[in-house]
Structures are given as structure tokens and as C-alpha cells.
Image 1: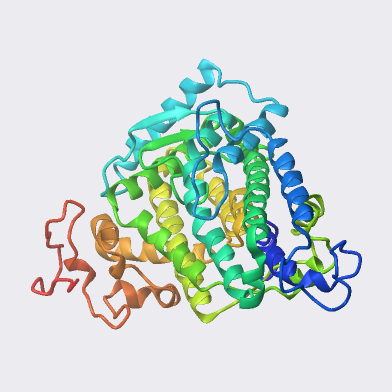
Image 2: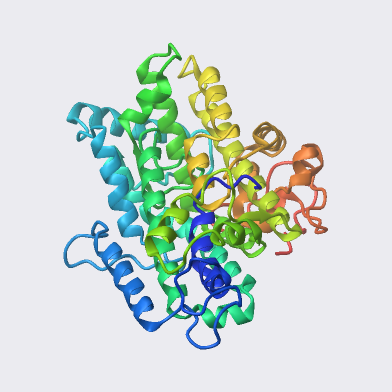
Length: 473
């Protein structure tokens, strides 16, 4: 977490820090402020004479008006708790993919993708107790992927970027915050604009490489809306020397499996969102690097502010995150949940395609490496908000689901998803047999065999010794 790529540094640095320096910069030579000298900030007008402030604000207004329109005529920009204009980010992302060519999906490719998703979904009926989650099966261009997933990206990023802005404000000395005046709001607006631009560029780059809607273990277009990108499928196939149809069916099975899980485990999406929010709540920052950098800039010059903000994402690290116990604990829970999702998907897909796809083992290993080492989706998200959505213990999670299926069958395996308190913990990944045989999870003893079926009813499993024990949740 210490090598934050870019997005997080941006919104905050400029925001509150510029305001902070505006309070400091009165002592800097060459600021052009009457009476500035070396004696510090004047007690009256904090940024020099009123005419200078008027000129600065006019220059800022000119800069803002020169930016590309964030939305289509008649549309208002998408609101964001972090101040990022996601309408503008979406337009920038679409522009990025159109520059490299983004034709519509040909009818033949669309039909192949749709057929693969439907067929793979039928195969999953024999591998999981959860019913189909597909509402639509589509093939998308890169622009369509951007259009239909941007809302989810905004929801994922906002708690983190909003926390950063909040943290910057809290770190501002009270006397400097009181002197920031209109400059602080101006820089906050500029910061949101700059981060929105970078988010759009990053997501536009990501669209060049994604496979479907579930690359990060979360249906980015909502539950049931399954889609694959023919260009992404082709990119995944490169160098594998496996027939295209086989690769397409395997990836379709993974896409359909994730949608089954989220469609019939209603708490899962909100659970992941809550873990991201907990991670954001534990964030803390060292702003000394930003203070030093802002000390070199004339904060009455919006162009200078924009320049330093544009460069605020490099190796200099203007806003350094500091790990906290709360943040580490939330990250562990998040990584464990993602590993359990990926492990379940891998287990179910392997069972569904067994005997149908000869190269399923090689495809599974390629997918596992891609997820465990951080595919393009994880890297882009980390660059935007300083958080990598990586399931770091994929093999352990897969082994746990396999052991659970061997001991309790498909129904017993899938019944664990009925409540988040019944899910394996990070410690359970170290001791799958202990979890499988009903050892305590979080201090609460329960018998996996007595869990409810996906329809909510109690269903005894063969060989259970005691059906009187219900899970106490």
C-alpha cells in the first residue's frame, strides 16, 4: 500500500494542501503579495490584495471552461462523494478506446459469445446447487463495456477517494484552514477534475484488456448481465495454442458462475462494499511530501497548481499512505472474501467442464495466475484508489471448497454462502479440515450440515448425526 500509483494522491494533495500552503505561502519571497516579505501571512486578506485574488479566480475560470464537456448536452455531471466527475471520466475512457479502433461486435462473434454463455450456464447446473443467474448474455465492444460498468467503478472508488479528501482536511492546521477561503474550494474542484481525467484514461486502458464483466470477482454491470468482449477473449487466447471455441466456453463458464453466485447470495455485493469502506475508514496519510512540494509553488497561479497536481502521482509520492491496524484487518478480510469467491468459481467451473473441455486444466492455471498476480483490472483499481483487489490465497481457497464438497456434497458446499458469518476465515484457509468438520469460526460453533438450502429451508443431509443444531445466526 505504500507505493500508491496515482489517483489517490491527486484529489487530496491539491485540495486541502493547497489551501494549507495558501496560508503558509505568504512568507515566501517572490509571491507578489504586498507586504509579504519574510514576516508571514498578513492578518487581513490572506492571499494578497483583492485585485490579485480576482485575477487568479478569473484565470481559474478560464482554465475550467477550456476543459472538455463532461457530459452530453442537457446532462448534468454525475455526482460523487469524492468530487470526481465520472461523466467526464467515462467520456475520456471512450475517447481513449476509440482512438485505437473499437468497432461494433460483428453478428457472428455476438452469436458465438451468446451461445457460449448459454451453453456454459447449462453445464453449471450439474456443478452447483445455485440456479442460473443469467438474465442477459451479450457480446460487447470496449466502449459498451465502459458505458455499462462505469457506475460500479464510481461506487468502488468513491469511498476511498472521499476518505482521502476528508483526511487532508483533518490534517490541515486550524489557522491555515481558516485562511484558505475560496482558494481551498477552487483547488478541490480542480483536484476532482484532474483525478476524473486520470480515472478515465486508466479505465480506457483497462477496456483494452478485460475479458468480461467479472474480471475482478464482482459483476461490474450488475447481477445477471453477463457479457464477454471478443477482443478480450482473443487476447486471453494468445500463446495458449488451445482452440478458440474451448477458450470461449471456459471463460463463459467463469462469467456465468460469478453471476450465479451474486444473483443468489444477496449479501455478497454489499459485504464487499462494506469491506472497502472499512478499508477506507482506516486510511491515514503522511502529507509532509505534499507540504514540501506546495512550498515551491505560487498558489495564486492556477496554472502552477494544475502543473504540480498533474505531477503529483509520480515517484515523489506527495501523499504517502500509512498502514493502520484497522486498514490491515479490513484488507485481510477483503482478500479472503475475494479468494473464497475465486476458489468457489474455479471449483464449480472445473466440475462443470470436466470431460467437455480437454484443456480445462491449462485454462484454469492460466486464469489462476492472472488473478493471483494481479490482472489489468486489479492494477487499474490500485492505481485509482490505492487498493488492489487480489485474491492472494487462491489455491488454499480452492482446496477448502473441494474438501467441503467431498465431505458434504454440492449442497453442503454451496449452503455455506447463506450468511457471511458462516464463511471461512483466513485462519480456516490454513486448516480446511477443521472448517469442513465444523470447527469454530470466529468463536461460534456450527455444523455445516445443518445450514439452510438456497431457498431458505432447512434440509437434512445424509449422515448427519444431529439435526437439532441449527446455525445460531
